[in-house]
Image 1 (cartoon, one colour):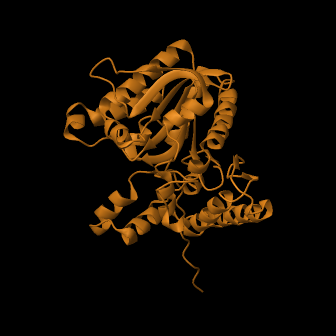
Image 2: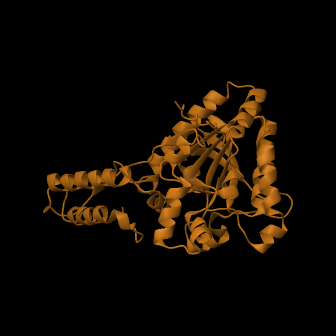
Image 3: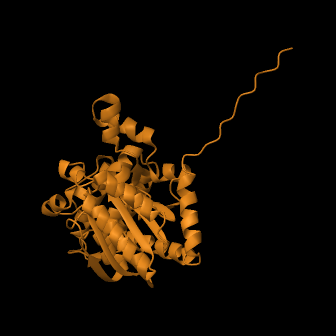
Length: 343
């Protein structure tokens, strides 16, 4: 993987990848790259055996690093600039995609992508956050922070999907809803609140996946679903680690961000344990950014499986089950300690 962006905790892997790249430049053999893609190199100095050994060492290092990834490092992976976004997944796993724009009230919001397409053999509506890849696109998409017109656009298209009896697939990847003055003036909080209410009673199957960042109401605004999953190296929480650190310790730095990430229990495994999500979808070795196509295939397999199961339920069963799913979040049982018997 060649990229100017490097994660500090991946230093051993980066060193091995540098050696592999150098070896490929002096070998005439086909060398398997990460994800099983073969590359053709130049001369005949490095043997296939030497390069295969380096690849094996790199894969072993990746497995070791990603097996026990800390919460704060998980956040870093979720924010990797090469991590696939909604448009990437649409390209890899959707056929006949037709994008729909505008909320029919104010305008269009590029931070939320909506459109009809086919995933597997099923027609569905796809809704997802888009952060952007280039500087210009990031600015246009507000770095994935949607405005109220984005949430109203999403809901308007969901109502269309309900009218046509088509399931809805949402891809969550946002640090939070856009907090600017204009967004607030146009009813940011009301738009998200209405989405929560309306999505809870839409009478077609809804599945939602956190593919990167899942921050606060900005994420929940399109994530009220029958089944909710997270990619293994994504995060989902009421607030970002930096926001939490700024509130609790009055400053966000490496130490406070690390402590906040651990306290928030924001990783996919933590959310699964707490019952907030239904499943963790594994990613390719070293994260989705190393093999977007394989990540899309894993995502597609999960979506198709869930839609197949949910299609067997009646509209009333879908709505009742969705209500119960979210109603029980945060429930707990209190046990009173019994005073020890005195003799």
